Amino acid sequence: MSARFEDRVALVTGGGSGIGLGIAERFAAEGARVAILEQDASRGRAAADKIRAAGGTCEFFACDVSREDDVMRSVEGVVATLGAVHHLVNNAGIVLVKPLQETTVEEWDRVMDVNVKSIFLTSKHFLAQIRRSPGGTIVNIGSVSSFVGQKHTPAYVASKGAVALLSKTLALDFAEFGIRVNCVCPGITDTPMFRQHLSRTADPDRTLRERCNRVPLGRMLSGTDIANAVLYLSGPESAGITGTTLVVDAGYLAAAEWSNT
Image 1 (cartoon, rainbow, N blue to C red):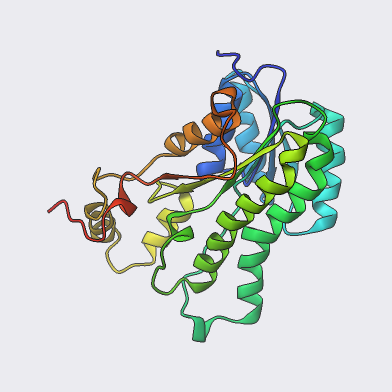
Image 2 (cartoon, rainbow, N blue to C red):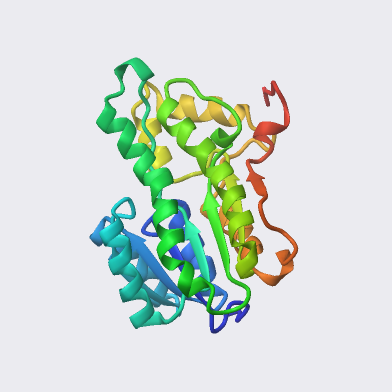
């Protein structure tokens, strides 16, 4: 097992499944002690058990990252269990597929709370810990929707646009502390959330083929693809990079029109 992040603590929100789990697994494989913040307790415990079974160090902390009291409580738990946090990955996110005119205020607020306010809360309350050691980083997970619109997802697209610019602003504010802040923007990624979205279509297999036909590399991304980008932006190889957005989309945004057929 590599020791690239030995003696470092990495915290991943929404680390119980999908991209978050992929990021947590990669950090653990590289020697980091990993903290998973996850609202779904059964999913969080299973993720931590999986990482420990593979030889990594991982602890799960139940947390609704949209609630300040939960986040503040998680700071105490993580520090007491693993020590100061060096690398924060704000991955927790939800999607809402619904036209604006049908979206309720409660639905809009929930998307914004989970996708954007959570970054405000974790960055604010873990800042003192990240400042304690050199080389601290924050990586926020945006989306290709940080750059372009998508039909019937106004709340989600607005939230991911906010994540990209919030990342740039935090990079400026935290530079004086030696903390680098960047944003990774995935394209079509094979996650439980994406599979659930597909399942709501009339023909999930056909929908998936049509989606992949619009991707130059012709495939979905994996959690590992995204995790590799996150670890790069968290490690010394990217020491000169802050305030940027790294798009990992298999070429999706490279062309105005594209078809593999």
